[in-house]
Image (cartoon, rainbow, N blue to C red; front, side, top):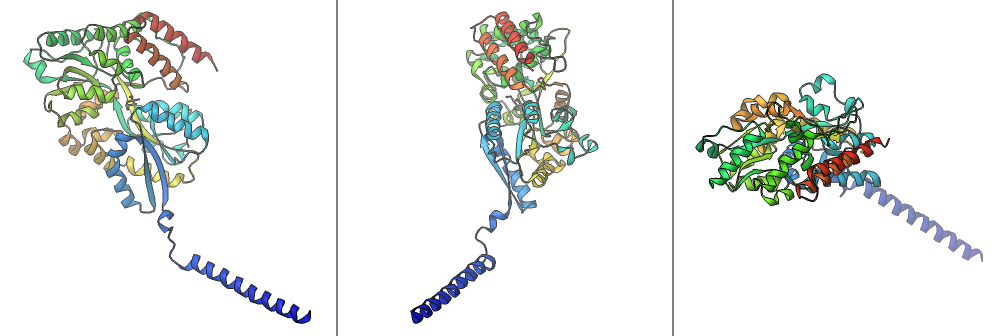
Length: 431
Ligand code: GLC
């Protein structure tokens, strides 16, 4: 019994030594050997954006990572339609498992995202004086209840493209009014100069209200007054604005398919030489330079009704830091980097998107590449915001549905706008 006990104690001691040895060995392996997980010690900053733009960001991303070797900037690709990207961010934030440190935001999402508490106030990182270098409309699009939730990166403004060759050869000046646009379009179509007169974004998605507010403004009408929450969609002028678009479809000035076109479909038709006029954003001016119509087009602010003035829809994208990000300092380093003059200049030259820094519109290097840039400043400085209200997504959805019904002849313009106005009023009446 005694000897058995001694053997047992001996085994126990040997066992303890053995366990101790293994523990020391494991600790040494962990602390001394080079860790195979070392690369992931770089802090990962994740952002999601439209696939087209994610590709265009690649050189910018490479420059950022070269200068910031401790950060791994991960860009997740999303569909190109702005509302689909908004839905993806929204579900990630609502489910509470968002992998995003940064949100790349269309300005129309801002009030909803800020009100929901999904974004961090950036006032802790930047002063009002520093913000003065940016376009005021783009900065305004990032402010909600005094907080700054989005740093503008690239601006946007809708405009009218026209074929300089077709107009000149037929003795026309670029149009200023809706009436002139229609006259020129019909004449050039009748002469067989172009198949279509005017192409725009008529699909039921966010691009439709963006285009429509330019026509509304040109008719002296409005959508929603963001301060008083009054709705102007059922005014006579607003109905006339819808009638103008509907007529372009019914008279064959616009192709029947225009009610299914987003930006890219309409751009392709213009570049294929099939239309005299196109409504689109500034990025087309650069892409079309590589097409069959190179050197044969110009751009100008959107037309308006006689006696009224035109306005571009204010668009644009910027970066916000998500409230859930564990790395706000590193996320800000990304924002700071892409906002700098050098990086905005290079991104502009690489892509043709228009910068949020005001000085760059007259920058010698940019103007040498894109002589039309000083003219774009005029367009973006006269831009109109879509109503910056928390319920924007629902208001836009209502307008999209009824506009689409009018354009596809399911309802008259008057029926559609009366129904849109009343639904919008009910939406805004709910606290
Ligand atoms: C452009 C604009 C954006 C707008 C969208 C509509 O991306 O920058 O503000 O919402 O077009 O399609």
